[in-house]
Length: 283
Image (tube, rainbow, N blue to C red; front, side, top):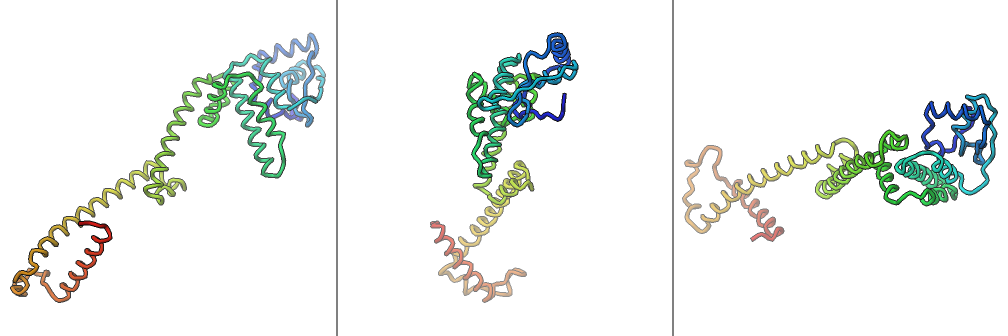
């Protein structure tokens, strides 16, 4: 085929003829001539007849060309090819959805550049013209979004749309689960969530770190609670007693003697404890 002739993006999505089919087409053209010309869009790209052009070159027949002057070229390309080719509904749905997606992307690009868009019209029209049930188009859309590596297999017919859709649904469920976990992590620990988004930490690793932090926090709270429960009730019991007057420095355990400095620190600690209890509205 003449590589100097470009192919319209929508036409390029269609699966090409196999070797036997192309050989048969070349033989038919050799015997009967080219019955239908190669159709080009206004930019000279092939809309219809990619296989006929290749067959003409194989048969040594000079091809004839005509330029499409109707409505939206992409819609024409899809319509004439889909009705002529023996494609399954799954293939048709997948081709349609991918063509529409590419037109929408082109429309967004043109809009960002200040242009209005033939691509917008194309995207809208492609969704309506093929006569495929909404369910098929919905499944194809799910495959395109959540299992893009299977799109070409569906278009080429090496994988059915239902099989690809099953894989895409599993991928979607995993993605939704991951998104929910990330949202929960962001609510509980924004810094860890940021590290996941930046790629510095996996979601699983972030939750493991989160769990370790919570466990360490719980351990520290237990230690603090036990310490206060041991010290403060005992201190409260000696209030107003003669215990203070009976203190004998010589009998104090090594390293645990009570001094004025220790008493001052204890008084400060009690004041801080009282402030915390007030802030937390604890009994």
